Image (cartoon, rainbow, N blue to C red; front, side):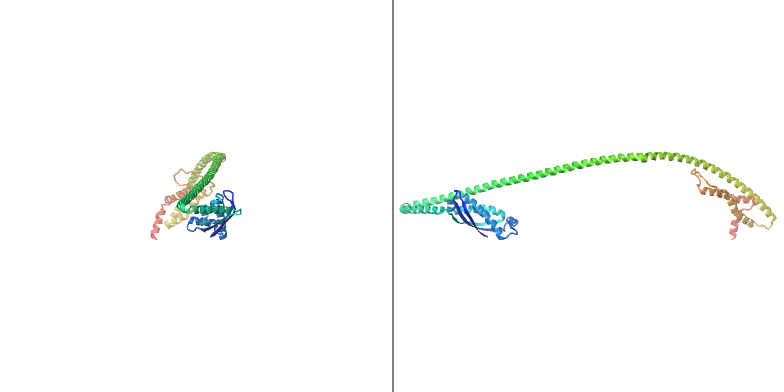
Amino acid sequence: MTLTITSHGVYTKLGVAVDVTGVAQVKIQGQSQEMLASACELFLGKSESEVRKVAQETLEGHQRAIMGNMTVEEIYKDRKKFSKHVFDVASSDLVNMGICVVSYTLKDIRDEEGYLKSLGMARTAQVKRDARIGEAEANKDSGIKQAEAEERRMASRYANDIEIAHAERDFHLKKAAYDQEVFGKKAQSDLASDLQTAKTRQKIKDEEMQVKVIERTQQIQLQEQEITRRERELEARVRKPAEAEKYKMEKLAEADRNRVILEAEAESESVRVRGEAEAFAIEAKAKAEAEQMAKKADAWKDYQDAAMIDMILETLPKVAAEISAPLSQTKKVTMVSSGKGDVGVSKLTGEVLDIMEKMPGVVEKLTGINIQKNIKAAVRRQ
């Protein structure tokens, strides 16, 4: 982009207002990734006219600043120096925007007060005077004048270069000092901010930890109080009543055990006596019936053993019913086990069966007929 930089009515170092027009060639630097990134950050989405306006205003600002630090004579006489100053200062500023200054040239300088015209006239008069002097002395000391002119020219050039070097040095030193101060202040500010943030976070963490410790302590105290309350409640509602109930049940169990033992002993004795009496009665009755059967056998010559056994077997259920009849009328039976023998109903049925087992022996004694032997013989015959 070609930019025309115009500064109107700028007061120079000695207070003379002049108008300066410069021409600059600028471009967006695409070869440097860093500059391209800066340009994208600042100008992405903007039109070319907006980019042009930013670059032009920046260059004009630097142009006006340098005009204020130089005299009209310096600007007019040494345009290269002025152009170099503007180029250097603007380049260092625009490079941060991703814009590269390709060139800058002072196109025109003028004023409305005739200052430059007066300088021209003085210069013209001086030139004419020098021309007359030169013309008068041309043949005499042309060589000397040429040498002196060359010497002055070189001295002026060297002085100009030295001044430029001094200006550049001062600029870079001041810029470095300003950058160092800015970066130092920024670093201190960032460090102070980070330090304050860290302190604040640490303080918040300490407060949160203190709150957690207090909450945990209160929870532990509440848990201990709850445990104590439950222990007391358990002591009052469960343990004490349980111990009393246990003592009561032990005494009741002991009394009931003693009662049961006594009742069982009495009932057992009663059952034994009744059983012996009933067995004696049955035995007596059986003897009577056996005697009657014997008489019937004597009377009946043809009555055989099988028939007698049949009659006996038919009678045995009746005998068993008579033996168990007392048990059917018993309302309550209490038994105490000593750890030996049967317990419960099997004990009662065992007593009845013991009596029934004795019946074949009684029948054999009464009749002389062995029931088991005859039954086995009958089975073998079949």
